[in-house]
Structures are given as structure tokens and as C-alpha cells.
Length: 193
Image (cartoon, rainbow, N blue to C red; front, side, top):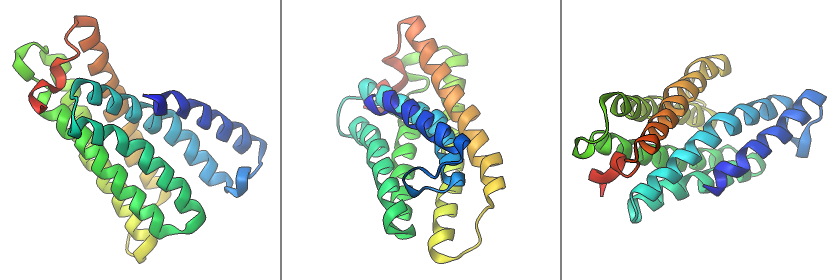
């Protein structure tokens, strides 16, 4: 949950530097622009949803889902300085963590019947979108390390970026909001225990 609170500040700093044309800490303007998008949408929403899942599913699976986000983010940062191979490791860590979040949400989206259909559908969409968008992230990362075909930056923004922002971020947060409003926030992942 702390990661979700920090990411908007990181995004804001990157946004100001990018708009000023300043390569902050040696990061190219394109990287800063991508940092803005990742930390405002993916970083915030993913960390918040992973934290909520960890709260709803106490134990090793929920904890692993929550820890994978800050761990993967730190590995991404290290990878910028040490090379693409480290960034590939971060993509694997983040992908596995997000798939775990998706799996826990998918299993529990209709747990014990108390979550209404709309909430279950929102959680289901958020879960399903993560499977696809994180495959794109892995394809991108592998392409940079192994020089294999991978999506262009424009394609990644149009697919991975938009789908994560709307399909995962918006739908996932709306599902949790509906659960909190109905007093059944524990329901989403009850069956995943």
C-alpha cells in the first residue's frame, strides 16, 4: 500500500523533468515519459490492488502478490543502470506478481455469492486483462535482451498501456470500490485462501 502512495510523487517528478526537457538522473526524455504513465496508472493501481488483495488474502500468496510490485519496480530501476538483462528479470518478477494478483482476484471474484454480478465482472475483466498485457511486457523485455521481434513503442502504448489503464486499473479499482461500498471487501478473494 505504501508503494501506491509513493508512485504518484515519482510520476509527478518525472513529468516535471520531462516537460522541462531535463534528463533527470540521466534518464532519456522518452523513459521519463514512460515513467509518468507507468507510475500514475500501472504503479499506482497495481500496487493498490495488490495491497488490497494481500489484505483480503493474508498469508504467503497475498504477501507474494503485494511484495512483487515494489521488488519488481526496484529491479527495473537497477536494470536501467546495469542493463537489459536485469530489466528482463524485473519484467519476470512483475509479470509473475501481477499474474498472482490476477489469479487471486479471478478465483475469488464470485466467492460465496455475495459479490454482485457487476463487481464480479469488473474483477474478472481486470484479472483477464493482466494475463494478456503482461505477456506483452515479457515480449517487450525479451526482445530487448535477445533481439527477437517485439512490439514497437507505439504498439505497446496502444495495447499494454491502454488495456492496463482501463481494463486492469479502472475495472480493478471499481471492483474494489464496489466491494468496500457494499461491506464485502473480503469476498473478492475469500476462495483463494
